[in-house]
Amino acid sequence: MTAPARAAFPLRKRVLTALAAVSILGAAGCAGAEAETPAADAPAAEAPAAESPAAAATEAPAAGPTAEAAAGDQTYEDGTYTQTGGYQSPAGPEEVGVTLTLAADVVTAVEVEPMPDNPTTTMYQERFAGGISEAIVGKKLDELAVDKVAGSSLTSGGFNEAADKIKSEAQL
Image (cartoon, rainbow, N blue to C red; front, side, top):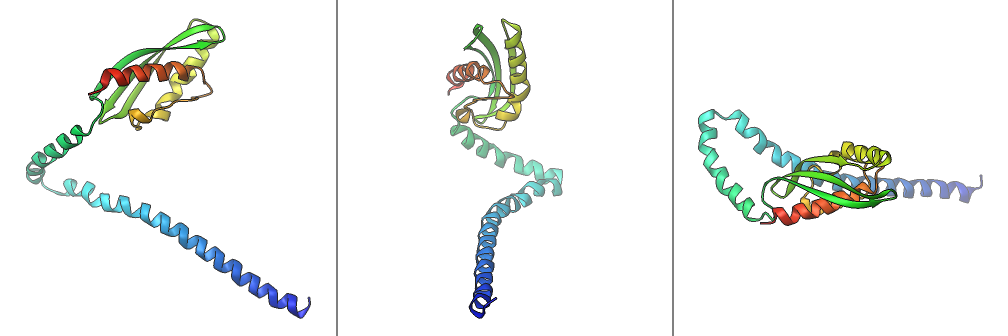
C-alpha cells in the first residue's frame, strides 16, 4: 500500500465508526422512549397488588369517574353484535356471519360463522374464521380494514360488510 492509501484507511475507518455510533445512539434514543413508557405504567399496575384489600376498596370509587369519562369518549356501545355480510365469489354470491364483542370501541372477541354454498368457499371461509381473531382482536372498531386472512381474500369483503353493519348498530 502507498502512504496516502494507508492514511486514508484509518480516516475511513474513523468515519464509519462514527456513523455506526450515531446510528446506534439514534436507535437507542428511540428505544429509550418506548422502554420508559411501560416502566412508568408498571408501578401503577403493581401498586394495587401490594396494597391491602381495604386500601383497594377505598380506591375503587376513584376508578368509577375515570371509567365514566372514558365512556364519554366512546363512539360505540359495549356489547356483542352479530351481522351477516355478503360477497361475490367465482362460484356466485356468498355470505359469512360475523359476531364482534366491543369494549371501549375495541374488538375484544370475534367469531366468524362460515355460511358457504360450495366446497371451495367452505375451505376459504374456514381458513378465514381460524385466522381472523389474531388479525383484529385488540384493534379499534374504526381501524378495521381486513384485506386477506389466512390466504382468504374474498371472505374479507363479507366480513367488512358485516363489520360496517355492526358499526351502524353499535353507534352511540
